[in-house]
Length: 246
Length: 246
Image 1 (cartoon, rainbow over the protein chains, first blue to last red):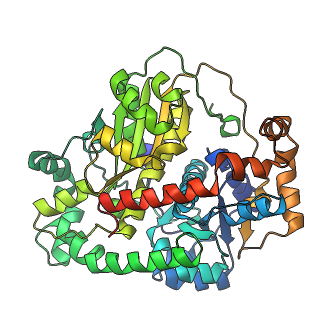
Image 2: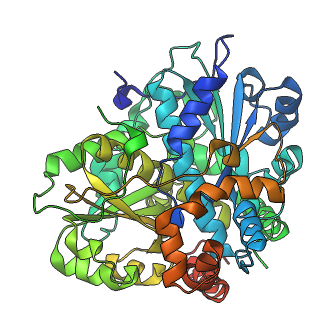
Image 3: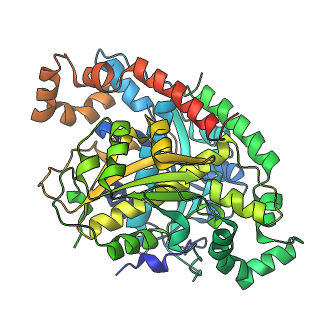
């Protein structure tokens, strides 16, 4: 039986294909995820061909999983279909705004995560690519996404061909607040992050990056302020272009 | 065994309490959900007291589940904890921007959905409240959420005390695109939405709202353009106040 406490991200896949019926069955079952007003404000684009995976690769910084995985799925916030439905039914839709984007993004992410859970229960392995919103315009171009459609998540999917380790997580107290939000004291931060900071792999990570602390690896190397700001600007422009912001 | 094809939203709960150990075990297992850079950019606020549920009720338009459910969970995009960690570790964080909000919101929503799935597997029932981002400021005030924390989802949770129906969903072809996005033709829209439109409950819905089509119930009653626009403006202001937009 599937045990989520042993869940790992899988980046290497065997040559075994994913049967179409299995993929469709998983997507169809994931449709039972709760959705706003039962409108299902999402779409998923399925990529299997080497040509299309090669087109997506640069948007995901050429992470090798994109071209190696048998299937790449791009989950999109989608108000295009609903808007088209309204227009066909003498109704006047008004979903070209930021609230509607967040509602559709929520629908798409919940659907995506149910799909991930069901896929992992079947023994499939996957890697969730955080890069989707970093280069959204390239993905929009590659997948020909129209107005009121915005990619929000990508997963690479296949049968596992590696025995990846289970990642550490913060203790539960670090993420749970009872009744109201409790500000984090210095002592709390020290207690919650000490396990992570003492892991050999993280110490190694600090060393090879020539940093003093693990946090500096994140702020100075992985997620730099200037990059976050530049990409935020781009994101706002892409949301405008897709019709979700004025 | 849990069968997702029979999943229903549960709005009525029995008097039976939710054991703390069960709730914590579910939250802890949900922590294995994939998360950006293993940063876990989310927090969850647990509300059980009548006083706090009463404070949250207006933000959720007094939907009765909020005060009736034994537990209300508010899932938040949280860059506050990570930023505090960086500051304690001689690192200079730069996560007061829109990209960082979307990254943290993604983390929070994926975590939330894994939690929902695990809770339903245990036999618990839940209702996902779409209202969280409609009145975000009221929730921020009630839960005392600091800068760089933004509520993105709320669920009410309890042991089911109703036998709710399974909701209809669009046929799989309606949401899946092979290789590239296929524009929806009139014929496709008619085919995909006809089942939903022909359901007795939806016909009734059109009738009691005095409308001609089901789509008009959404555009004219449930999700009106002027409301969406006004709330979009508010949302942008709240994101600025919480430090995620300039």
